[in-house]
Length: 196
Image (cartoon, rainbow, N blue to C red; front, side, top):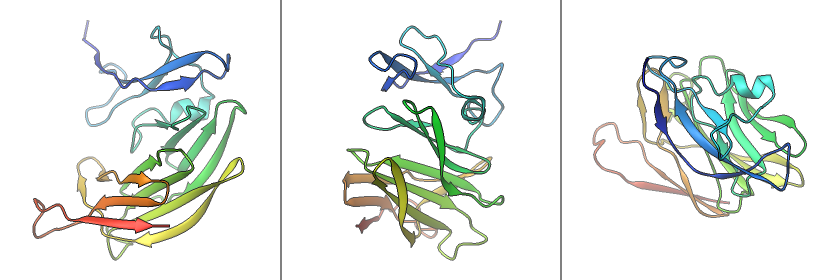
């Protein structure tokens, strides 16, 4: 029997069947279910049992551009599939499209702000973007997230089976930092900043 490689990221998540109960997200690479160049992810309860998600959400856990991320308050799940970047609301059990993706995109990266009121997505597309990457910024507006800014910036990225930008990070709810792309000096890590 082949061994399963278990990478664990413990993040508290509200289990949508019992809102007061908590679950933990474990990032699982299952060699039997996975592929040579990607991970298969699964949302699991504290006891390791699988959290049942709608089929379309669950399908997005198989070899995505980026692992799904829970919001800081553990009420939303940010994920990507071949059609776009989406957000699943556990309490409403609904999925919303944040950003429709071009079919020929090369990579997707995303992150939450510390309070969960902002989302930043970096799309890598060397053929269609002059800076090779664009940053899409979203702000919470009531129960939805609205696109507030698109910034063409050269974010550091690397390519394998698909490309992925170095994950940007929020210093606070209004400041996003990222590592600038430097093809001539990749070892130099100059920081870029976006405020909004």
